[in-house]
Amino acid sequence: MPIRRLVTIFAAMAVTLPTLLAAAPASAGTATRAAVVAENRVDARTLDLTVSSPAIGQQANVRLLLPDGWDGRQHGRTWPVLLLLGGCCWSDGDGHESWVQKTDIENYPELRKVLVVTPIGGKAGYFSNWHKAGGPKWEDFHLDEVLPLVEKNYGGGTKRAIAGLSMGGFGALSYAGRRPGMFSAAASYSGTVHTQLFMLGPASVQAVLIGQGLDPAALWGDPVKDAKVWAAHNPHELTDKLKNIPVYLSAGNGEPGPLDAPGAGFDVKEKAIEGMSQLVATKLLLSGGKVQTSFYGKGTHAWPYYGRELRNSLPMLLGALGV
Image 1 (cartoon, rainbow, N blue to C red):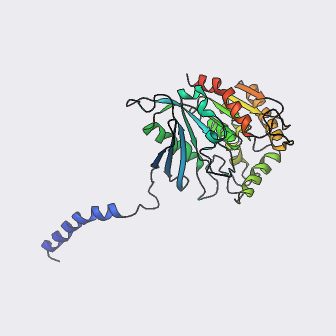
Image 2 (tube, one colour):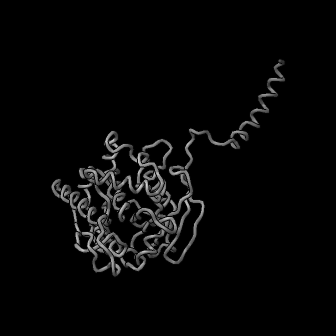
Image 3 (cartoon, rainbow, N blue to C red):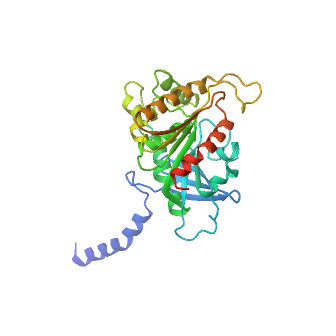
């Protein structure tokens, strides 16, 4: 082929190739970054974000409860972050709005000094990167996607505390233990904080997964064969990391209490959770941890207790943030 012809071909390729590459879809090995694709200002204190998440393979909602002065903030102004996790198996919405819907946290004056972040957690996501290949990566979504986005664009600071109810109580302690140094304090309100407690822990986790139509082995694998994977997420097995930060643990004893509806019966789940929480509290104390407990006696697995315990734990949580 004549040299002039080759020069013409290569010149054409130099013009067209960048355009073709830019238009081509990313390869399977190319990482796509999480991004906020929509915002909805619900009211003066509440901003909802829709995040496109590679970690969980879908768009997901995150609610921000805004601090005083947020709208008029200057560039570089930040607030400490309270990552507030919900429970499982909600019957309406998708969980990111549950704390605001079910409690009156927007009226807690203490929370006007921090940026509260309440993300979707999956109906039974268990705040984990699932063991089964191709499963959702909830830990990556919350800690490597949501928090950096909040810090980059919405005034979130690098001082953080974490708290949650039920499954979210598990998530709060699991995340704090798995990511040492990320959180200054952690709180669990009726949390399933010992997922390997005899047969009770694994059975309760797998029952939740089955109830949501999910593969019980997809989360952390088999409780026996993959015991190390279970332990790597289990707050009871993470106390060597948790002992370095203040931890708040609360639960009732399952008997109907002052905040329960009339006619409420005995709650076996809450009784089991009380036992789990007491074991974790004892292990933390024996290891020299800083633990505050609220084992308040009568009370079931219900929202009025979660809201009350959140407020009771705020002096510890916010104190750790320097607020």
